[in-house]
Length: 134
Image 1: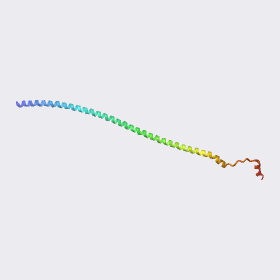
Image 2: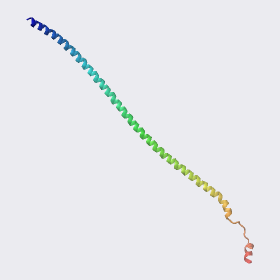
Image 3: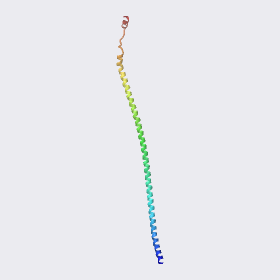
Image 4: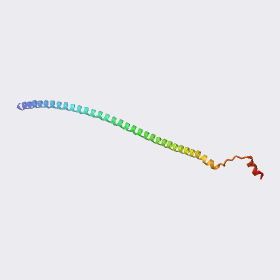
């Protein structure tokens, strides 16, 4: 009997210890569940932040692409404008050359006209008949 009572005592001690361990394991499990929930919330927050960051990066990339296209358009328009300015400059020089040439021709016409024209003499009947009579 003594062995049975010792074993009953041992069983009651074991049951008490088991109950303590069971309470501790429930507390630890509860703490682990809360820790997992907090970690999960943290992961969700980090995922949300990463998503927002990726969206901002995509928007920045789109803005960069748009700016590059704008720079290309401005460069193209600038080249076209330079061509137009060159054409206008060429037209201006041609016009100035033509005007200068016209002024020189008009101004020199009287000079060359005097060289090429004969002197005007008023002819009289006597002057005209005298060579004919002879």
